[in-house]
Structure formats: C-alpha cells, structure tokens
Length: 230
Image (cartoon, rainbow, N blue to C red; front, side, top):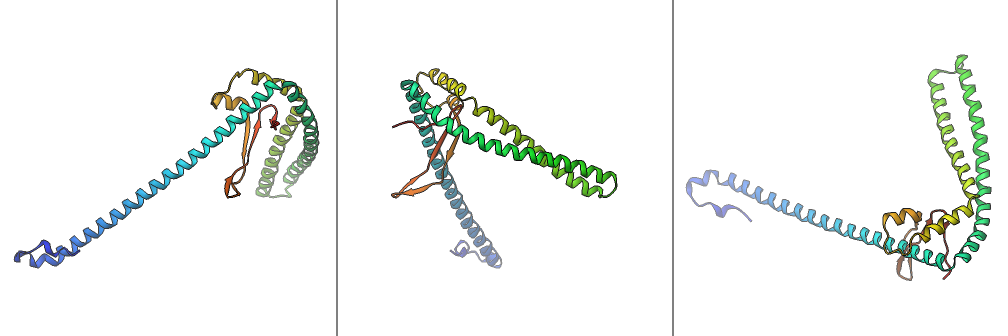
C-alpha cells in the first residue's frame, strides 16, 4: 500500500514525496524481514524433523542390538555344548581361511619392507656421493619412510591376527563366562555394549516389497558374527 494517507497538512507537502518513499521502503523492509523469519522457522522445522528421524533410526538400531544380545545369551545358556561344537566347526574353516590370507599378506609386506630398507640405504649413498640433489633426496626419503612405517604397522596387525586365530578355545571360554555374568539383559547400557559388541555394520537402504529395509550385521567380541538357529 501507498503511505500518502498519513499526511494532510499543507506544510508537509514539500517533504511528502520523500517521506512517502521512506515509509514505503520501511514497509518493503518489514515484508522481507517477515519472509526471512518464515524461512528460518521452516528451516527449524525441517531440522527438527531430521533430528526426529535420526533419533528414531538410532532407537531402532538399539532395539535390534539389544534383541540380538538377548537371543545369543539365551541360546548359549540353554545350549552351551551345541554352541561350542558349532562354533568350533565354523571357526576351524574360517580360521584356516583367515590365516592363509594373513600369511600371504604378511609375506608381501615383509618382502616390501626389505626392498624399502635397501632403497633407503641406496638413497643415502647417492646423497653422500653428490649424485642426487638435497631436495630430491628429502622427498624420496620421506615417501619411503612413510611407506615403511605403514608397512610395519600392517605387519604387527597381521601377526596379532594370526595369534588371535589360534586362540579359539580361550576366546570361547571368555565369551561364555561373559554371558554367565549377566543373568538378564534388561536394557542396552554402555557397559553391556562395550562388553559384548565389537563392530556393527549397517547396509545401504533398499526397497523390498515396497518397504524400506537395511541389513544390520553385529560382530561380537571374542567370537565374531554369530548365527543362532531359529
């Protein structure tokens, strides 16, 4: 709307055009401010909706993990001997597969470490003889030393996995002892989560028969993933 209806006195006529323009600008500014406010409120609503969805997803995941822990614990208590036998059968095959892969990776890593040691020694010889510029030497040495450090970490991890693969019976005994220490799992507390769960893998969302589904794989400490008979 025009702001001219605010004025009627003759002595205001010389300033009327300027005042009308100023008031109209203020009205426009107020209109834009209201629009910004509306957008801010809309964004807040969207943010709250996202938080609600995320919270629902976390809550659903907590229930899945809790139910799985209860199911595993109940089965181990009721069928301890069967659980031990089944796990040993599966773990022997899996352990053999993992050990074979780990040994192959370890052999490659140790071979590469030996090569890098020789390359670094050669680089220092080239530097001393003045056959390689200082900047070039520092760049190459840094790259090889970084790779060397990474390979050393990898070999240590592979050696640890080989040792762990041989400790099946010890891990089983510890897990059963852990199950016995909890007579009932009423809720998923941080203590229970940290005691039982090693990793949780969540697959990509998929549509099956019009429903949104996601695969959840739970890996337990000491024994890995567990498939309980229905």
